[in-house]
Length: 144
Image (tube, rainbow, N blue to C red; front, side, top):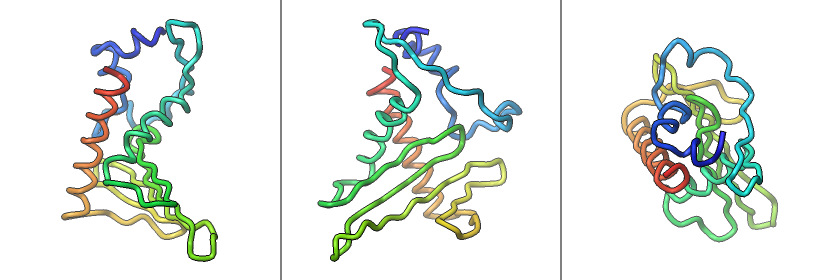
């Protein structure tokens, strides 16, 4: 599939991962993502698309402090990743990664070795708002 075909609005709707898509097919394992070809014949790997999406996703939470690394992206259908990494006073690498899973029963988050916790209220509203903003950003800036 060419990049032009991939970015076509109709194709985008069919291939873009849905935020709250709970159709029966969303519960099955996803096939291995193909590489996409640009018009100049170079390949765009799935990982490259995720990296480009994450570059936009990290901007949703305001300026990134000096020495911090931030990522926010949809890892796979209905699984979202937020990561913030930084150097501490001694120059050691610190960080937190949160995995959000969107299920018919709600949105659940997992931090490190802690159990999954259902998010509610303001935290759920903030997650939904960030996810919608992310999808609009990537749709507009990557998948035109």
